[in-house]
Image 1 (spheres, helix red, strand yellow):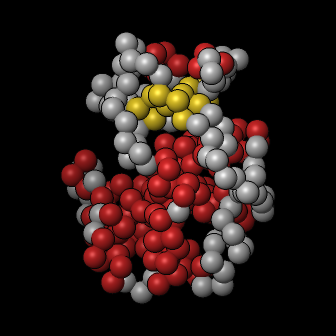
Image 2 (cartoon, helix red, strand yellow):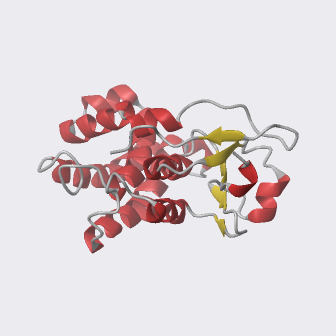
Length: 220
């Protein structure tokens, strides 16, 4: 297969934004070229495509560039959505994703990476982040996933950030009274979409051969 005709994704394995983009590409069955980057040594081509300098960055064969993770997700699933992740497409679902990105994530960063922020109290920000976790707990007490009996875009978009929150203090997180979130997160970590996109690759350089990510074999 000629890789020149495929989308190219600049990604960083541990970034939750890149994780959810990769999972959407997995879920769509899209074949693409993966370029793993070091955030401290970003490829010049990636910076030419998107001056933001953040991942993910998706270069489409027609030259279009998508550099927001949710936009990558929507693009991939618009091509093919065999797992039905785009349903339900409701205001509540979209609002929950926005709340994750605009409220939960800032507190998560100031909890997990407190040393990067001046005068940040990590435990205070953990407490504020728990408000979002409690909302998830309430939802997940009624169904296995956030909006129904199966995963949807919100589950795929939000779980990487809850995983990051839990990783800050794994023992504390799993000792707290969030049994439904803990069950949901554990199932996510064990799921095929997550395990498939967390394979390790060496950082890409222009002299390297392309890393081709092929479609899963058993989409249903």
